[in-house]
Image 1 (cartoon, rainbow, N blue to C red):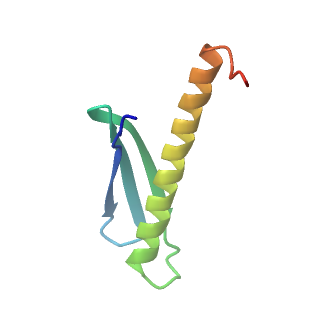
Image 2: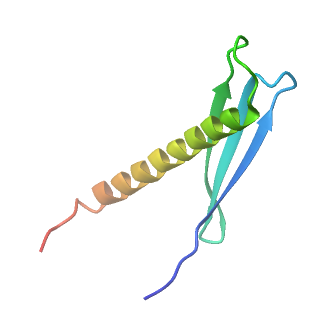
Length: 87
């Protein structure tokens, strides 16, 4: 059995007034940057500033977008192979 290692790096940045957070998730696999996605979070100006919440929302959205891309890649690969066969 071959062991593989995929790594996801998440970079988070906030704008100057802490109302918008952007997270960039990059999947490193196959010896290179393989897939990338972005997640955004915006704080309502009337809400109290809690940067951790924006970080969590933006990172979670970036990871969900990355998961959707990977699932789409897999579905496309299966379709190209003519579907899965059961034994």
